[in-house]
Image (cartoon, rainbow, N blue to C red; front, top):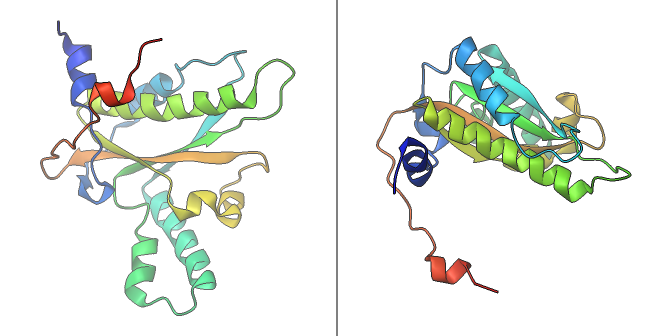
Length: 188
């Protein structure tokens, strides 16, 4: 029992960001990716997520910000580490931050809104794979650093659900071991 959608879902796997190279998605492909990322369960039609796109020079500016903050917190950091921070958003030709906008609501629990943002991350990854790209969903320290979030323009209640790195694979990506179903599935 197979079809192209099932095959894609069974073969989806993350690629380390540093193995992703250009060219990245075209403007038309990026629009498709974001439209698909937006087609997730969304109780109450709140759109409890939004996207920040890092491409071109924007990747270097975000990396410079990360390096500046890291250096402030780690005055003894060597140049190699700071260069790694400067390159953090340049590892792939496209990085999309999925921002969770979950907030108190009279009818829709915040938890459901947070899950919707996570679904947007996964839809973005699956769509990238469907277009022939590979991706990686990471957060890393800067996603949790309020100074970094503020510099990106996040509101006080917003959080980074993930940075989705998207590019073309430069190496073959081997699958990792997956849990046996009998370890993660039970019947009631």
